[in-house]
Length: 132
Figure 1 (cartoon, helix red, strand yellow):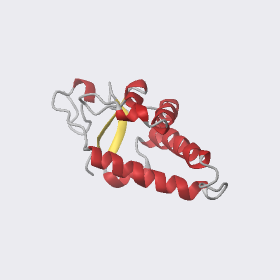
Figure 2 (figure 1 turned 30 degrees about the vertical axis):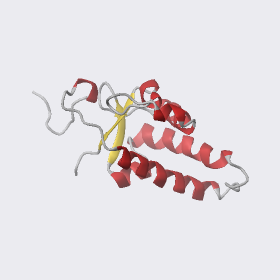
Figure 3 (figure 1 turned 135 degrees about the vertical axis):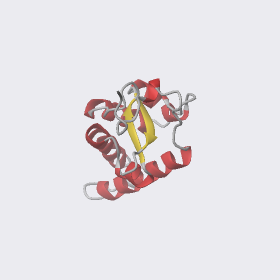
């Protein structure tokens, strides 16, 4: 018997529908603004373009690895989970995903499940957050 409170793994769920690109982009914009604000503490984001990118990669590693959501994803009600089991992806895969996302191009090459190269290499997928 399956637990109705645990969603099916996206890879095995024939009804899986990914969230809209608008929600994903909204989450990224929120995260980017927060990263600019945080990086302003230790660097000038305008002069030191690496600072907000570094913060973004670290935020993705920590937040996706531990909570399956960045602050922007929390606001837009989406999560980043393991493609095969629907669980958290872990800090290392979160860092890899963040690093590849910072390169931009991998995020633009998507499959039918809206998984960019950064998602496929991190074995992750963006899903709707469960309603509480």
